[in-house]
Image (cartoon, rainbow, N blue to C red; front, top):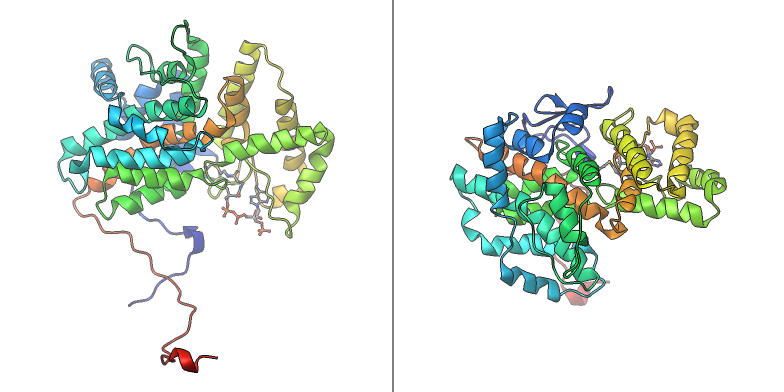
Length: 395
Ligand code: CMC
């Protein structure tokens, strides 16, 4: 019924009203609740930005203390959930595990499906934010056959995550606070990005009043693809491939392939639906990458390849004409690699951080006085009414 507009990929359709994140794609501006991402990353921490996205304002010191305690109350997961990890093949991709275990959390908190109680809704958000690092580190530990390391609530968000990833029983593990700070900046850059594919998926699932844990699992699934959050893993694999092919000399061939319309290959970590200039997150990510590599005394040939690739692409008419610039995923892999994070975990880290945005957006949506189920229409291109043909008469 009615007239509908055809907008494949929703390039020009606003699906909701939101006061969380603002992007100016032409100027390369990204604001969380009005605050520039550059300032939040340089001056604030995860707790500040998480509180800001969820509650709309930066917390006072007292609010921050209470908030930190409230989140940390939920870092443990039900012991029964640990059984789930044993059911996966040892080489399962951690994103596959995350789709399963986060969705399974809905079974532990069935009461939050279709709740109108703001306190219950908020508790579900806190649980998701607190449990994601625990579930993510458990996926990694399972994949390498090591015992699970329980969370430590005396540490910051990033320190605790590094602890759960890299500590082993019977050995001392000291988290380097400077590296934890760098990781925290990376997380802040990924917290929210308005109506991207995964956030829209979370909202779409939530619009049917589904359990928020299941909604976030649907967001993880949408994030996994290489056109979205899976790009960080794909970038690193691309840079490694260039290195294997002989290093910077092979860049022209990669560029040629990316431009070839008969080849499905794309330059990973380049281009964005909204940014038609340098992604502000990529700029910050490049700075963090340099800082971490310098601090760790690492000289990574993949960084040289990435810089040369960027330089050549930005001078190439194909990329210039289409306003294709590096996006957040272009440099993130190099810095995560320096921090010792295995490549299969890159998108999991993205999911951990983006959980804050997903739950903030879900909460904003379910707090509206009226929620309308997401239900796009289509342009039907099939047959119109036909007469049924019995099987004996089919040719
Ligand atoms: N390499 C080569 N050509 C490209 C690329 C690329 N990375 N990105 C876009 N193009 C071309 C595309 O072929 C098209 O050319 P033409 O006009 O001749 O048909 C034009 O640029 C416009 O591309 P589009 O596919 O219509 O743009 P989109 O807004 O639908 O897609 C994108 C955006 C991010 C999916 C796409 O740029 C892409 O596939 N990039 C590589 C994957 C990537 O880095 N993804 C991470 C995105 S940022 C973080 C996140 O969202 O998670």
